Image 1 (cartoon, rainbow, N blue to C red):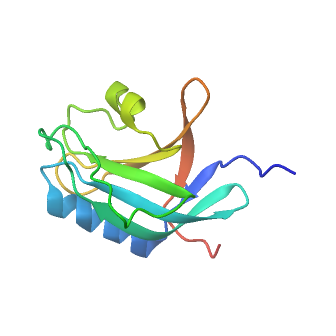
Image 2: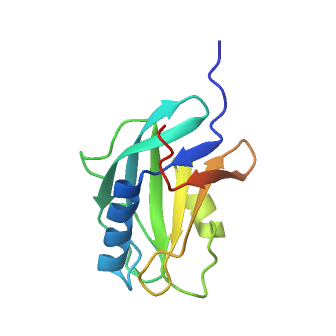
Length: 139
């Protein structure tokens, strides 16, 4: 029997706060990393946040992952921030082409504090948006 399709990413409050600290501390540069996750039915439930370095020569406008031994095994979600008010709150065309992971989370934080979260799953032809739950409802 095949597992059901992932339809939602759940980020518990303590992990959300950790992501938001990372994004705010690195502002005005883009920040990023991985969320280690557990599969719970149709949800990926974040269990740990692992920040990684931004190796971009233009860190205010682009995030390039510096991968090391801390990257968790699948299932995992790659996350990065968009820190420019001019950048869209979703995946850019560069993001769509360059993110090798099946799941991505964009944290829109043009002034440092996170304003929104958008999650995406790579499909056969294009990325599809997933629901993001940032409040733990006792799952």
